[in-house]
Amino acid sequence: MARPIWFVKIIQHFFTERFTIANWTKNSNLIKKLVDFFLFHGDEIFYLPKDQVIREVVSRDINDADKFVNTFLPDDSGSFSSSAWGYESGLDTQTEIRVVVQEDIEQTPSISLPSTVIREFINEANHIWLMDKCLCRDNMQCKDFPIELGCIFMGEAVMGINPKLGHLATKEEAIARIDLAAEHGLIHLIGKNKIDTQWMGVHPGGRLLTVCNCCPCCCLYKVLPDLHQDIASKVQKMPGIEVSVNAEQCIGCGKCTADDVCITHNLTLVDGKAFMGDYCVGCGRCYEVCPVGAIEIDITNDNFIQETIKRLKEKINVA
Picture: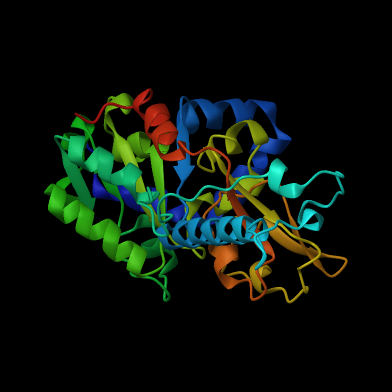
């Protein structure tokens, strides 16, 4: 049964207390179990890196590969320099190495972008719902990001949402919303999120996919560092996305630690260098603001898009 609007307003009233409630899960095993069961049981939620960030990462990797190949190209005499390998073999380098280039190397390959995950589910969904407002930004009266770019819900369960909260939408409307959210710098979150079945009063949970357009100032999951690790671990980076700090390059400017950058405040300055904690969601916002490229993002699984889709489909059916 759809929740009445008065119930939603009560939920909003407690929104500002979310950090306190989250901390209780660390201090009381009973509260942890109750919060986990009623709000997070069976969840799997992924933050998606910004598409533009992944474009830049892939372009960087291509450029690095070009530099690597150029290191081993023959000099003007047609010979290879063994010093490029960092060792002296005592053999004619031309007998050791052969580089055969038969065609141009593709410089701009087709890139699978993180938003592909959302588009896949939009294309499959029989029912799509657009919220009229973002509950988080509306409650915090956000001044930096559009309040009207609310969540997208998919699956049979959306038919039970209170019609005063939003409307059924076409696939084209849904895609337009995620594109507009990206243009405004919002971060996409996607997954099975039991909280949404609870506050909206819809079921079954396996028939409701949540897509949020998150900002760093108001997002519910700013509470991740305050939650017990057993719960916080259900909100995660995409599989195959790794983020790290290159301490040698870091100049300690503090831009990545600003309140308006990391959703989980996962970066701090330690001994004049950026230090990454345990709650990185891999969104890429720190990567964007670093002036010297000290924040590094690596794709360790070429199938990270397909793997994310696979894991979500094991939890949710939107068709």
